[in-house]
Image (cartoon, rainbow, N blue to C red; front, side):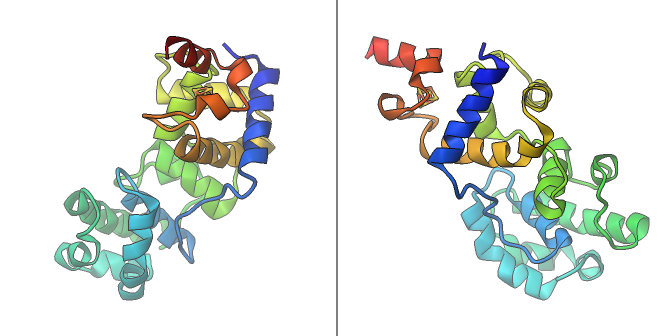
Length: 215
Ligand code: SF4
């Protein structure tokens, strides 16, 4: 397992590799950001950004989305995976926002997770990127990279990864580390073909060393 020092070094090196790592979903308000994150489950951010301009023009706030028919919502997002379920969640989350939070996206994780379709990861992304509140979201890239680098155990759960990372990193780095890990996973430590040979972390990555040894 990597030490705290090695983990911080790895995150610093990822920062040098990807100095522009940042959220790629486009939204104008916390509500729209929440909806974009809901849409991004099992879909690329690029595909989400293609549908949201029309969606947010038709239904810009919780009130209009809560009042919309699911069919109308589906119409705007039908090119996105799982769009039927997502339309349901968008409407239900908007209704809950109007009924329980005065139409305002709450800034507390325990409130966010009460919204239909919003789990721990979505809540963390909204806190971090819509409100700049320290939170560490664990997605598929973060999971793969932290396991390969042995920052966490191979069988660590999403919650265990979040707990370990927030323990090893200072709060002020949580949001940046999340984005760096995503970029690193998306463009360098790819799922099928990680670029181990050109990896600046090879000297501390047992997984990469093993891959190169067997090839
Ligand atoms: Fe990923 Fe390979 Fe780098 Fe390890 S050495 S972090 S597996 S790219």
